[in-house]
Length: 605
Image (cartoon, rainbow, N blue to C red; front, side):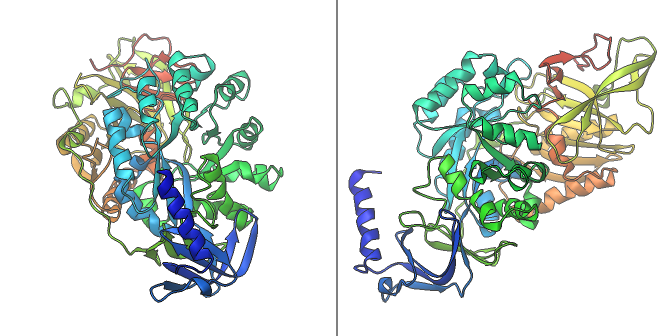
């Protein structure tokens, strides 16, 4: 901001605070939730001008003019707007605009987004699309530059790549707040030149380095990772994970999204061990559109923390002030105080976080869960809607688990799904080989998994086995949302249905689809990068619900199984994953065969 403009803003704020100029908006008679002092102060007024707070105190009548809009808080709580410290818009299957439309009524007035999903498909130009769309929203949307595209070099094939030069360029863009989660944690502690160059470029720009240490090993690799420079981490799932991160000077980000429920275990570091709560931050990471529409966003995470015994004011600090200070924007957001943007929630029930009104940048934008302002459609270019490239139409034989292993019983390396968590288990289960094909016995809850390369049209298909979805016979689910390289991933018990599902996604430009006995029974189309829809959140949620209903019709009882499905190709989170290059043991970052003792890599080509 130019110095002259900044000085003009401060003079105007002073004039309103002193009563020399009328406020645009005055909120009267509220209970001020002062996260900066840890108090709830009754009988408080707030005066706002130019979208910022000019005065907070017992009586703002001196700021009221003929044109001043007045809101009577009627003794309700005045809470700072909520901030999501780490999230991926693409996980909601929505554009930035439609994500904002969905979450603003829930009290979210600021988001720190990492667009590494679209970055893996389109590279720097995809990130730029998100930065440009973020800049025109009625709430604050900061962008973290993706750090790991691809997330695991040599273990997968992304649609694009991003390196130190692109990171350095992005650090000069308005709206870019720092470096997105550094998922290549072995690269950090093993001294990878690319990762350290990206972190160095971020430090030179004076911005925050996001962390992602997805390993239970808190020994030397963890200490090496912390020494490398990541300043926060959202991958903890255990009490000891939260403690270790805070002790090493990192912010422990406790996530509560659609499928990752990591608040309960880690919040005990505060409620039971008495660690300083100012070093803990709430985030959502990944939220499904149905969760946003029906349950909420950051407010949902705050409620969860409160339900686990945290004081409401402390929980709110973890989603406001703590976040703002961590990213260096507490002079702009994160508290109700003079000079900050007027991002204010009028709340009737503090422990339940019942949000009646949402004010963002001094403007009333939502009331009783309903958006009051319209948002313009952001124009996505044609190239962004053409990203699913298969070499040919797929056939049932492409999903046959062929092997050169001799007939008999073998031990298979199987991906084991863990409900409500991002990690998987590396299972070793008995299977039979008969006449050159792996035969799965009934009752093992095993399904075939295929990862189809979709960026280059190479025709590569990798095959494996997964346990935990509970699928019965004659069904398949396919998705182009497949973190992080977002190839086309298919899980099923019928080769014919797997082929139908994959071909349907190629036809519609991407998304998620469920096929049962040859019929499509659930589908959501995601034409933008195969990740996002241009439709409203409610419509996307309805379509996404048909996918969840399809999962259930196939016998699956997992909570948000499509989120679990989407991570089966994420080769940076232990223990076992699949990429377009093979089955990956993430504890060793090495390819392994599907059958132990066999050299089969289970590629269809």
